[in-house]
Image (cartoon, rainbow, N blue to C red; front, side, top):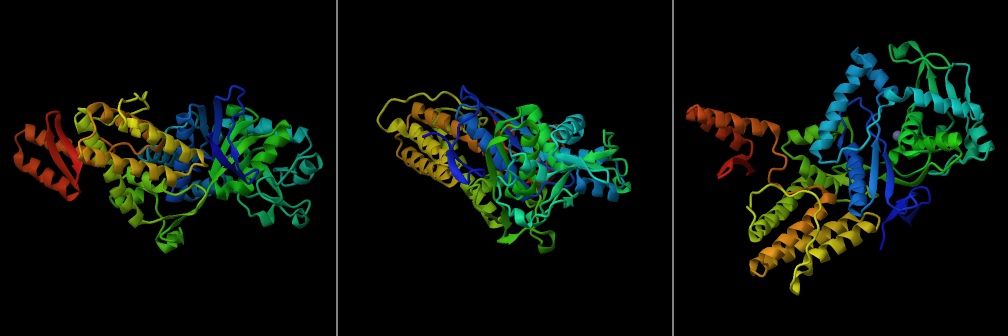
Length: 485
Ligand SMILES: [Zn+2]
């Protein structure tokens, strides 16, 4: 069975087939962060989902070009730049750096391209010029340039591909300048916003006077520049379906006359403790808030990967405790397998897919069975619950065989190789050497330095401090290592 994915365009599960005639290369664009604040756990659900899609495509043997934009100029950013009296670059730079740190904490692969909107003003202007030349964009009396839905539809374009719209309710000639609006106020949207005093220093020259791009045109310009006028996959949270993605389709297809994206994938919302996340309810978490509570990026990643991407996910702190317990079961099994395989139990985590050796013997088909069931599960529109089901079934079976001593070193090694392949998709790794917080490593180094200086009182105090934070030091032949209590 090949990979099947739900396509928001057709509202059905479809076979995934890349545009590449050789069926090998896949172009994938994920709407990235708007760098005006720390990304919250709802945002992270979408980014981890994007990471899962990319990793699974690579597992299937596709060569993926993964693009994620950085929105570093739009309405909310400009408002915050004004409020904080900083420069645009200084303000967005801080949140962009935090975003990439968080991406790493969650073990998401770095996209191959992370284009910035402010680095693509020329491409944005040239795209708007094309739309004007095609008669589907116009400069209004306020100096801003708008996309004309009426002209686009009149020319044969379909507005409302991802979402059914009632055009009787849309009033011709209405315009919306803000980047975010509801479908009830669907109207001509801004491509280029004429400079106003509130924009401060944030403006660029253009054929229509000084101003700045609208949010939607940014993604059309950057995705098509890197991936071409038509590409395979476009991902985002379901809140982006309208207007952002609908507008992206209109602008892109209006300019090129070609189909923009073959498969649209949208991740569902996230609730926290059963409620919509909001600062006033006290259930609003950035990744950093959760790390401060003592959870690790690995536990949070696992938790975000437990629900199907099209289901609303109820994120809870209790669920994170469950993630910790589930990962401990995997780690324990992997540790025992390493011992059985003759590798040091505390050796470095193995990384990257490796060729699976076909082991001899009747019962040794388990690793291949694991890979086959795992693939069947994810081929089915990324059925992650079934995929975890196969993983834990394998853990149970492996533990049973380890307990009865029926796994030889070759079997154990083969099982570990299969796990490595599985983990190239899941990205939860093995706990050993994984994600020891920087602060803890610094304390460990300080303790070593104290011991070297024969300041044993200080060394002991640091050991106690580590213990209070949930870490113990284990002395190994390779030197001291930190272990979670
Ligand atoms: Zn976008």
